[in-house]
Length: 176
Image: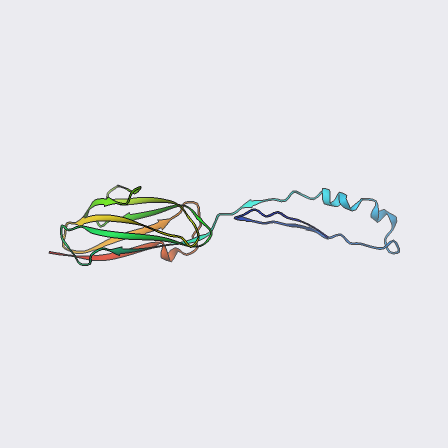
């Protein structure tokens, strides 16, 4: 028996198993040994490595600094991204769609805002399994009533098998 395999982190391992039947000379003619056993091993196909996308369960949560908040006052959202593993998540991005009836005031360093409605994007880089990080986004509500803030965490590289925890919606009441 011969096993050919290799280990490459974050990749599926494919092994080739060759079983060689061994017979005694009493039962096998001399021609059965005409090809040396090593020749069969040398003619085996090379080990094929198939790249596999890393898997990590990303999650996002958020808190509003004041609820309710008075119209025209500052309201800060604290957005928390967590990687529940098992792999490091690569090129993680935290986005926050601010309420349409609010004005964007600012965000943590490295974050930027664009679009209409305004979406704040915070590139987080790689997030190790078990790691948590947070960013803040500050807005100024301009209308009375309930406003919704929508945060999302994602990675264009790492597969997330749990889609139910990558979006967080927080409702805040704006009062006079």
